[in-house]
Every structure is written in C-alpha cells, then in structure tokens.
Length: 109
Length: 114
Image (cartoon, rainbow over the protein chains, first blue to last red):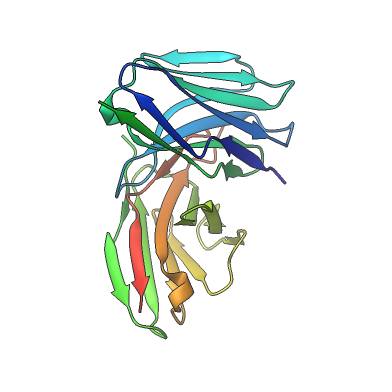
C-alpha cells in the first residue's frame, strides 16, 4: 500500500520568510495530493491540492509542486504570517488516502 | 461549503463504558471515514464506509465498530472503552463519483478515557 513520509516534523520561521514542507510517496498509482492545515483544537482543513497531470499549482501565498518521477511533492508558503502557524499534513491518494505524520509550523513575529 | 459535523468536541468516559461518536455530512458523499490522531503518529484510519450499511476495516479497527444506517451519518462505537483509546477522533467524508477526490474533515472529538 501507499506510504507517505513528511519532513520536517517541526519548522520555525521568521514572519515574512518562506516555509517549505516536503513529502514523498511510494505508490506510483497515486494521482491526487492534497495538503491540509490543522489549527489548534480544530479538524484539518483542505488548503490546496494537486493532481498527477499537473506539475505546479499556486493559490496566493501557497503553492504545491509535484515531481512524479521522483515521487515527491512540496508545499511552499511565501511571506509567512503568524496566522500560518499550524500543523500541516500532506496526503497521497491511489485507492485510499494516506497521510504524512504532519509538520508543526511556527511563524515568529 | 461541505459541512462535516461531529456530535461532541470533548468527551470524558470511564473504562469499560460503551461510547458512541456521531458524524454527519451534508454533501451527499458516498464515502465516510473515521481516523484517530495521536502525537507523532499522524492520522490512522480506523474504519471507512463507501455506502449505506457497508463498512471496511482500516489500519487499526481493533476495539472499534461502526454503523452506517443512513448516507449522511457514520457512527464510531467503542464497545468497551479503554485508556489506550484516549485520542482525538476525526471523521471525514468524500464523494465517490468521478474525479472529485477532495476529502473533508469534521472538527474532531477529543475523547479521554479514565
């Protein structure tokens, strides 16, 4: 089955800097890669996703890139703000959705 | 907007009690899921259902059962709660048609078993 690894587990950046979170997956049949943001005490919220026929997708300050050959995908957050502080999860979907272990991002003002 | 609601945000139960966690979605999704979330372990799938009265075991089904009598409602049951079931429980739903893969989560239920 699919196995998703996510790095780093924690990430601390200064407000205004960029943050990058990376994930790798094992199942070449995976075709959908969402990213979720989970704030304290809340459920994960879908923030951006990418499908296997696209290499990059951008939505304002967040972007996701996908390298199918290398089986890895990344989340990029530019001009970080304190409200970006949360736990971020990546996932890969072939027959079922598999999640990374999460990255705790802290943006220091 | 898709809405997934869970019956309780916080729950405290005693060891041996039977516990029901309810989840309701309003988007007519075929697929519904129950996960538990523990520090350092990420999201682990307990059970899922792809249709009314259908259920499939996930990665960690032991100690749990589920019920899906109506399309919009998916219940997780702890037959006899134990302290190692103290966790955050997350329900999710996803449509089963076409290429719409987006999966939406509820707010979670933090269960403490004492």
